[in-house]
Length: 230
Image (tube, rainbow, N blue to C red; front, top):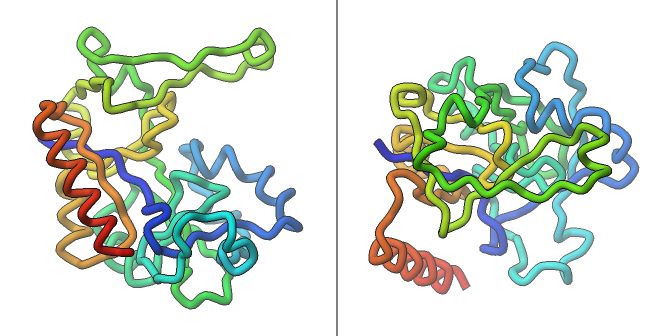
């Protein structure tokens, strides 16, 4: 069984989007429910307006984003990618109750909806703690007093060992305490993306852990891919 971290391509030429500043109050109201909430929002959702980032601030990014992707980065809701209508039409039948697609408003015709993952687990339910490397982020006294939960991030030096019997049929899921990657997917999800030529998604193999040789091969392949886009 293969599990990948899934996110949107950054600094590789695909368009990125964010909320207009005047909509920031709307963002604050829905941020946590969108990113980590397990309750569906479709029945009460009011479409948010978004804009192409580089249209306003192109100098902020190393690589101008002028290519349309089926999977695009939503800067304000990282981990909730923006999808084209084609991507939604392909993914909706196979992801059923694991995600929901929330409509957006944008002058860009490629922007259709953001994808909110509903399938969220506590780390103890999906990870074998004894064999996993879980490095918790430090919390200040104020964070503890305010009830901000602890969280961890995955890096190439860490090992996450999953309980395969729990997530073997899940396709896509999040771990409540994991801040990076925001979203995990199985090989079946990756196959759906690649077989349908959906562009803009990036996958990093996390489980089973790669050997040093495989890590180097993956790094070299990524560098060749990136150079080919310049």
